[in-house]
View 1 (cartoon, each protein chain N blue to C red):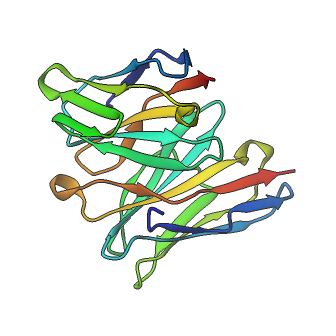
View 2 (view 1 turned 30 degrees about the vertical axis):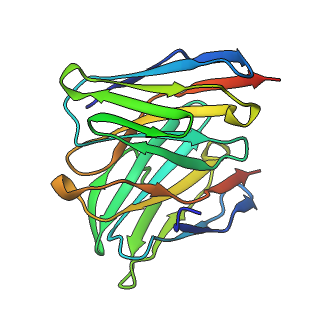
Length: 108
Length: 115
């Protein structure tokens, strides 16, 4: 099956810093999504990005499907950005395979 | 609000018991997926239904079963519960399946604690 690897596993930032999270996947995929899991456990959709680049405020994402990776950029980080960021790829049936996540802690 | 509704939000039950988790997908979504998030296994796919029919199975135990009803809501039944079944259970929905699959949206989850 498809393997999904995220790096780094943990990240500690000072408020205002920028960061890049990476997601590598082992096979071609139909779908790629980035999620933020907040401290209450909710999975918040950030991007649906099987290919190309998208931006939403301080966040942006790029997926290079031919090279099987995706990047999530967080600029000017805020304490509310803390939590776990998941990359998930979809197989031909639609189910998502999740990476292990990157745990981000933003300090004031 | 993702539009996917899960009930209950929290559930505490004893070993050996049976529970039912409920999910209402977003309006218009035909696919429903169930996932389990535990500390040691991460987020794992359990099962998928599309328009009332089972379409894919993942790491779902034989003690667990699910169904999707004509109104498209889904239920996940967990029986003979063990301590290790304690986890956050998510339901997600999307419009299609296969090559027509689109973005999946997740409910708030049901936090199950087995004591």
